[in-house]
Image (tube, rainbow, N blue to C red):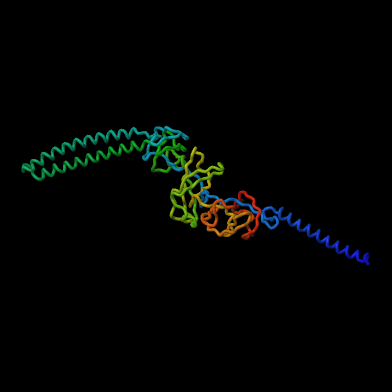
Length: 381
């Protein structure tokens, strides 16, 4: 009887042993799978997460556009009157100072005209003195009844005519002086000569076009600042105004920023593109930015210093952030302020320095045990 039962008992024990071994392998395999799963795995009942501390820093809301760099100031220097160019004192690439003489027309005939005008003024002054004395003498005699009213009126008209002649002579002199002045071409500001469109001996006339030869004799550029015109869509134009901070970044100089500000915003939209033009002017230290290149323009719309800031990946939806407290997940309802590409401002709900969960936060619930790793959050693509 005993031996007859042995096979049945042994089979039951064998089946129990096999089941236990299989379950053990499944449990062990499942545990290894969770640990090996990295960011989304669990160790036992604990969820793996990465955290970063909530920081106190300045956060800014920005707009980013691309535009072509231009020199801040450009002047085509030429005479305001026609004539033959007598001298050009500078060449392309020369640095010049404001008021420096760059070129001048042949002014010999103008100087003669000035001398003639000066002589006419002298004659007119002498005539006025004679007319003044005559009027004074006739006026006294008229008061005594010794001259007729007709003679008195004639003397009075002579005085008025002499005054008008002097005024006319002075005007001719001023015109001659003006022509001499504008025949000399001066630098309107400190800068560099970037274009020379004529040579000595050329005849120029500002009233006629100079196709292919510039609109002046020389071009002077101030490269100490640069400007970029950016096109704002209707959704952004209300956010941008004069005086806002801005900076440029150029692909040929990675990591370097050139700071400036918005100088004006066109209140009218372009009829074709329906966009609004804004001008950003930035300093150009070392003349590093060359006019003509394209630059990324960042406009700082709003800026909050000493804000509590967390990575954008830490915020679920618009109002939930998980923090790690004693290796346990705690759900926080937060109120969001400014946002940029990588970070958001938390107005309340998170304290500075708290361990904010930035990886492994999806699917968490309040009270979930955690395996915590500290580190930098991955940025948004």
